[in-house]
Amino acid sequence: MILLGTDIGGSSVKLALIDSDDGCRITARGSFPFDGQPAEEMCLQIRGAADEMLAEAGLNNGDIKGVGVCVPGNIDKDRSTVVNAYNLGFHNVPLKALVSECFPGREVSLMNDADAAALAEYRAGALEGCENSILLTLGTGLGAGLILGGKIFLGGCGRGFELGHVPFRNGGDPCTCGLKGCMERYVSASRLARDGARELGDTFGTARAVTDAARAGNKTACRLLDDYIEDLSDAIAGICNMFDPERIAVGGGLSAAGEILFAPLTDLVERKNFYRARYEIVPARFLNDAGVLGAALSVCLTNA
Ligand SMILES: [Zn+2]
Image (cartoon, rainbow, N blue to C red; front, side, top):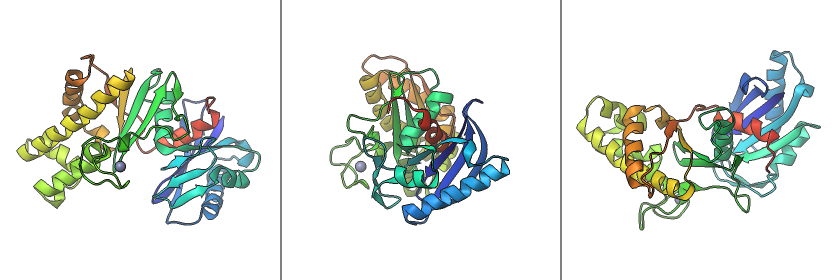
């Protein structure tokens, strides 16, 4: 079955054709810039980019079974309207209907991007076979998607699982959401980048630069990474107490950090969770492809 996955981000729209019968293989890719164009215009661009990809693959629009779209924002309970996606400037946009107009007769699905990424990891990636599991995406923010009982958890009211803005430190740093001390201020990759820039200089203003420096033995970088892992392990130990997951996958740029992150993190989470259990914490499989893959797979979702 051929599906079109579309991942709408703050600066670009990524597309992929996916063969769901062949291990969720991506058979073609496309993208175009997003710079605040209206949703109607963007949907026409999605159709245009899809037609180009299909033509190159020797296919046509009728070969697509469905179109899945994911956005960095919250959507309504029946998964038809983007309620708020601040990075896109979309508020109460009936995106499912707009996409359907551009792809008549095709099934269309709308999903939050973090939920889509978790779905991709569960169906074909690092969480495969783990019916109770979590994907944490450590990037600019903290994205999280939860698989419960073999289904993606979309929340009681459709809002899902917003781990990044769980209160984490009383009276802590101001967050982009307007609250203070949110978890993402302390455990996103941006936190490590901020610490690196402040203590080591601007050339260390990325999480990758700090982890590389720590691996090379830089004492300040080691201390910054240790502090970061303390906070991240607090967050994950709390998640383990709440959900007792079979596995936790870590996505985003930090997932490539390797043992310098995962070994101490796994040890600390074991010491800090209520059960003193050794939880499996692994790198995610799909990095930049998680959104398009999960969006495409959401077309076949049976629980929502
Ligand atoms: Zn917040």
